[in-house]
Image (cartoon, rainbow over all chains, first blue to last red):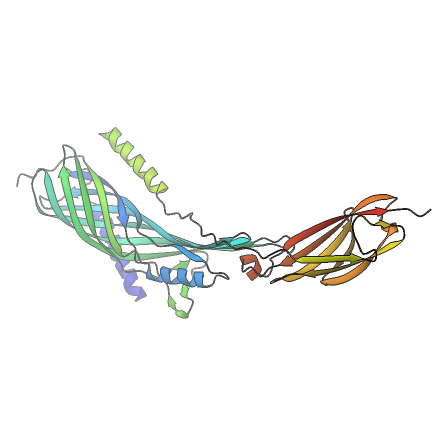
Length: 252
Length: 143
């Protein structure tokens, strides 16, 4: 299973390299910036955060559990013909979780922040439209580089006994292949285009490896054979602006 | 065009960095500690209303913590420790030589206790509250 994932990553890397070899100074070249929101599956990390909360010595509360959050990116692309646009994409996403308890005497917290850098290639195929409006089908293949930071803290004060304050931080990383499909609507201005896109992102996931020691992985606390993963699968929606360095003609 | 692109990219980078997920909300659980302990102090003079000591004075105390636990108590005479105990009921002699010279001194009793409030400090076994009582004691030097 692991070797298959590594093979996928190699394929993605080759696709990115091939795309980079395109003549980016060619005509019909564009640059896009997008920002929006995404939902993230994160099944394993939700499970792990629930486990951490259950380990509180007092009854804490889950403040947040990997909610939908901001995602944004940039891409450079060129139009291959009247229908097809291909490009290289970079996207950044982050989300997290927090369990917390506090009272007059102290506090206990468990925080997770997980970030992803997604780099890949994309293809946009024009389904319908004219010089002003376009509807395109989009698909992308990417590598997702994830970084998970877990921090736990407990503190309690006492006017007689020694107070308690302890915590630990740990960082895990993973790299996994991903695909996405969706739709994009564009309104074309003179040298700019404005658009929205929405689609589904599927993360094939990979093991979360301890950053300080790659031989150690984040495992299921109830099943040490099962390695936990970050899963960025979910729905995404963006608004975007495109800068055309050389606007394509769409008189076909 | 180039300026607009540069500004847009800069704003995007700033926006992206500032939009990194962070959570600052907290959950505060209101825990109400129990009542202060009931403390009885008696002396062989039957009162601690500004007693005068020429030789010595027996001080007996009893500390009762309703719904909680007594931890420790100590007595200070003008900030000097003269007696301590982890027993809720005990006694000790207050002697005239414990004070330097004649005059009124403060006898301070500090009682530490926990109330089993269920707070995080209580669950970790370090919850402690302090009850303080101060008495004025007159000392007379024997010549």
